[in-house]
Length: 154
Image (cartoon, rainbow, N blue to C red; front, side, top):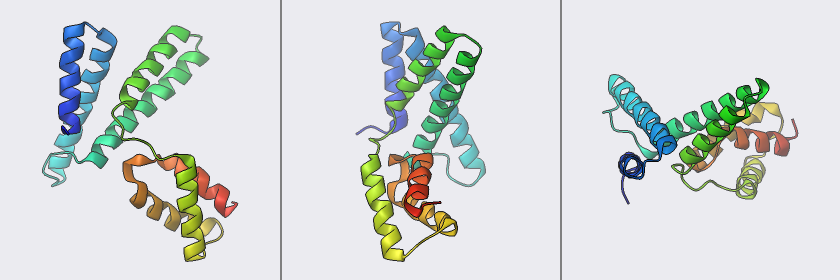
């Protein structure tokens, strides 16, 4: 399987050939953010090449930005712009690894809570750390946090 960045570059070329301006613009911005992240990681002694986790983080950030922009456009009565932002978020979502289902996350959280005998709000940090390490890019931190709060009843 190709590196995630190579896949983006390949899809960018395909979008150019097809004349898909919306996809082209979205992928150009993603590629730019990936390059920026590589430069930042070089400065932090990371070698410059992004691993899958860092790649997924950049993609998630782009999705979140577009979702927030769509919400703001809706508040401003700009439904056309909101729809465009949502389409761009869908394009970016195609670059995330297959996401873990809520049932899978809930089962893992419940098992960890029972195994470690965790309870109360103070246990959330430890639980989150373990679940993020387990699921990595396959699960969103907000989803894990919501499920953790439900299971710990806080």
